[in-house]
Length: 103
Length: 170
Image (tube, rainbow over all chains, first blue to last red; front, side):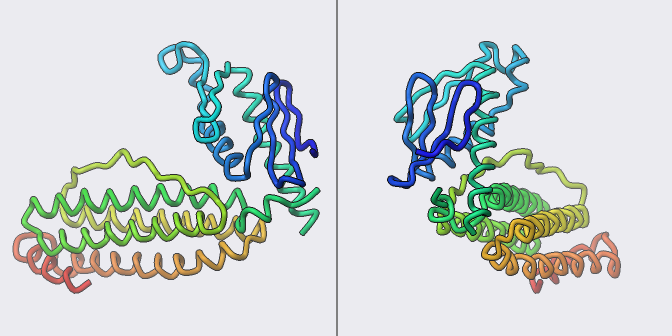
């Protein structure tokens, strides 16, 4: 597996052999198709982190995410969400650079 | 490292994001036209209402066109949420001015995506969007012609009725 990006809590990988991706969430690794990776990206980047600093909008300061058609359920705190957003932005950045290099 | 992304998706991911935003805009436009049609129906302007119902359907078609394009090319299209639809208008002229402004905003948004396509060399999406560029020019012109009728004929009484009857030919 090729490492795409490693953030503070998480890491993303690409597996050429199975033509899939993998995110290491620390306590478990989740294998993803490209379509599922797109879905995670959409969900995570849509999270308004500023709401975590407003008790009326997000009292607990956590996000509950279901991934891969509800196969996985995660509970993330504010720092993890910020880190996950960074991981996904960077992962897609690396993938775009790879596309440019191999074009 | 293999370019798996290119194997899976035929369009640029950033362009896909912009196209998803465009889907939401087209859905919003469709709902705004429905609200306008409702206003016309309640105010005895049945030809304008009919015209606006057709516009609502057309906007939905545009939305579906983009929706299917994204999915057919390996991306993921997201069904949009629609909110902030006003049902309050001052006059028929107000409706058509608002409609023209809305079309201009859609045109600007399409142009923005085309600019992005060129920047990232996504020629497939650019080619797909050419149809929308032509369509938007036609849409804008349609509303300009209707607004010219208000300039020529006025906005009161019989003039309003005559304009309403002429709108059915647009």
